[in-house]
Each structure stands twice: as C-alpha cells, then as structure tokens.
Image (cartoon, rainbow, N blue to C red; front, top):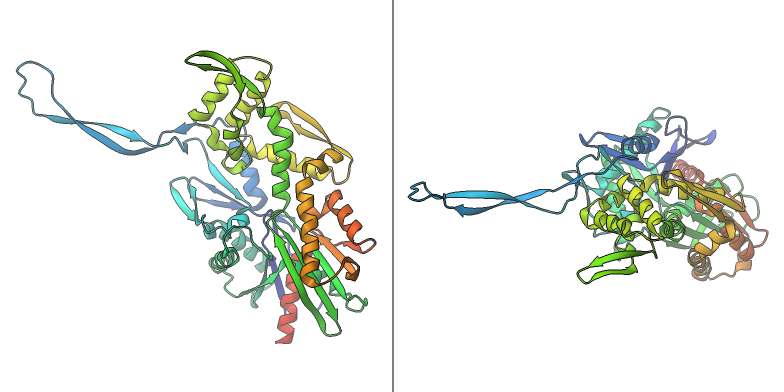
Amino acid sequence: MALGIGIDFGTTNSSAAVCDESGVRQIVLDEDREIMPSATYLDRRFQVITGASAILTYVADNTGRTVEFIPEVIGEESEWHTPIGPGSNAPLATRGRPIYGLAMEDSGLKGRLFMGVKRLLGDERTPRLAVFERNFRLTALITPILKAMRERIEREVPLAATVCVGRPVNYEGRGQLRNQTALQRMVDGLKFAGLPRHEFALEPVAAATSYLHDRAGDGLQHVLTVDFGGGTLDLCVMKLGASGFEVVATHGLGLGGNHIDQQLLRKLIFPAIGEGRHWNKRTKHGEAWSRFPFEDFAPLLLNWAVSHQLNQNRFTTLIEQAIQGGGEDVMAFERLKDYVRQNLGFPVFQAVGDCKIALSSANEAMLDIPELDLSIPVKRSEFEWIIDETLESFSEAVHRTLELAGLEGGDIDLVLRTGGSSEIPAVIDLLDCFFPGRVVRHDTFGSVSKGLAILSYQRQMAS
C-alpha cells in the first residue's frame, strides 16, 4: 500500500503527517501533542533531550540560577626565579603563573538549550556552535529533533518509502549560497537521523496542496499561499488546471515571529531595564550624570540563548556602579541586575510571546513578568505601531510575489494564510484589504506537514 510521509521541520515548531488511501492525518510527536517544539537540550554529559521536555528541563535547571563565570586557563607563563639569600648556592628555578582567557565558562550551567537553529542553517559563517568544551556542527544540533520525529513516526507506520521534507523558499542568511548551504546541512541531518531516503518540497506549495487536495473542482484558477511562521515568510502563486497545478511564482523573506518578539522586547522591556536611562558615572575628574551604555547589553539581551554571557565583570560592574550612583533610574538598573544574575532571558521571551498571542484575540493584553516586578498593559494599536516595519515588509513581499507572477491583486481567486504569525490581526487586515472576501485561514500549524505527506503519496502513486 502506498504511504506518503511528510516532515515539517520548523524554526519554532515541527510536525509530521502520513497520507494513504484513507486520507491524511498528523502524527503525535511530543507526548500527546501533534506539534513538537524544535528544541534540543544538551547537558554536561552531552545527553540529549528534545521537544517540550527540552524546554522544561532548561527552565527547571536555569531560571533563577545565579550564573557564575570562571576564568578559562589558556596557558602558563614562566619566568626565571633566583632564590633570595646571601651566599645561596641554590640553582636557578622557574616560576609559573596561569594565563587566563575571557571569563566565558559558566561553571553552574547544567545544560544548553538550542531553539531556532533552522535560522542559522543558511549562514556560511556559522559552521559550528560551542557547547561546553566541544564545538558542535549545526547538523549535530538538528539531528536529535529529526531522529525523535523519525522514531515517533515509526511507532505508527513503517518508513519504507521516501519522506517528503519541507523547505522555505529562501533560508535566512546573507550569502548567495545560503539555500545550498542550508539544504546540504539538512541532507546531512536527515541521513544521520536515519532518513536517507528523502526529497524536498517548498513549504507554501505543501500548504496549498493540503487545502486543494479535496477541492480540485472548485473552479479556482490562481491561488496565493502566505505561510508566515516563526522564522520565515513564504509565498507562492499556483495556477490550477484540469491536470493539477503549476507553480507560477515564489518569494520568501527571513521574517517571522521571532523577529516580532525581538521588536517587542526592544520597545516594551528595554526602557524598563535601563535603555535611555542615566547614571552617576564616576571618573577621575569626579562624578557626572550621563546616559547608561545600554547598547553594550542589547545584542545579548535580544538573543536569550546567549544572554547568560552578560554575567561577566565588564557588564556586571557597570550595573553595580549604576545602582550605587543612585538617582531616579535605580529601579531600572535593579531590574537589569535581576535579569542578568537570575538568567531570565527565556522566561522574558516567553512572556513577550504570550502577550503577542493574546493580542490576536483581544484589544489589550498584559505583559506580565513577575520576576522583574513588571506588568505592562499593551494595546493592540501599540503592538501594531511597534511592528510597523514588519507589516511594511510583509506588504512589499505580497506585491513582489504578484509582480513575479505577472498578476494583479484581482487575478487571485483565493488566498490561503497559514503559520502562527498569520494570526496577527494586522496581517489579516492587510490581506483582506488586498484581496477582499478571498482570504481563508488554513490549518495554522498542520497545513505544511499534511501537504508534504500528500505530495509524497501522489508521487508514489504516479511512479
């Protein structure tokens, strides 16, 4: 019996589905859930945990933990030492002292959590990531997730056929070879995960396939798919005919929910933890009030996975000096201290994400971070103002896709929106404005994996 299998390895979440003559269904991947977080946790013994358990373990091991960096010895310096004392006949001796590198080893860190590695796959400049005393290839960090997915699929169906794996139109990255680089890393990861027989399909094409599978006779001619997920925005225009469909145009950007979360963090949280604040800076000429150098902290704060690196003297000393200097901004610096010392990067990003999701169904939500004694009311209008540049990029991407297809907005018969970020009301409003009465919400988190399984099944039936 022909059996199609689809794997959607996503930036934030992953899913899998199977298709046979009876229909298509998703596979339970993570305990009792069909959606599995694309997360890998490695402890100091390099034992691996994936999915929701990886996140829970990281949170339990690290949230609130005081980060302690210790100097890394990179060598030893020797010097001649002459024994002291008149008439001493003792031979010359050497005396050594260690040479220390940067204080980059977190002695209390029990494990490292990796999420969103898909965003790095197309970056030629990032072949490896440091995990404790070892360097891991990016392929090694995605392989456990793919392996866990394979094992869960095998619990339900045999893996005898070629697996269809999703890919974005364009992976993130600056180099011209970003797509080739990312695909080669994916190929290696799939092979190491026990999935050597695979083929790739564009994610927006798969999403459209899952919708059109049972609707071939609807009389549609041109369909636009907008797949707006955690890491990328992928669009495609398909032309339908009696014998199937033809992909007319595709377009993709490295733009997604993760970028939106960073924008919210910058605009809503940063001012409450020191950005734009002033401190009483002590210099050799005395004391003077000046703007706190928050820009030195921002790059690490914007990436929660590395924010623990702020626990170094060059950062913590500045925070302590700002607190000791007094003034009306002391509370903000106290929050920054708690943020850094208690390793709060992940729970803060979780709170930002929860607030974003709440604003999809309410006009106002509370950004609540009790660890920092912060409770910030956020109106949907403020949220939309914060992500204005993202919405502009989204609009430009839609217009560019139509341009590549040689079509006008009125030529599109149906628009399928899918992916978590497509639930943002401002995104829905933009699409409704461009294509009034023709936009359909389609299986936000399962459309791609189901479509991949259908494509896999169709190819087997045709062979």
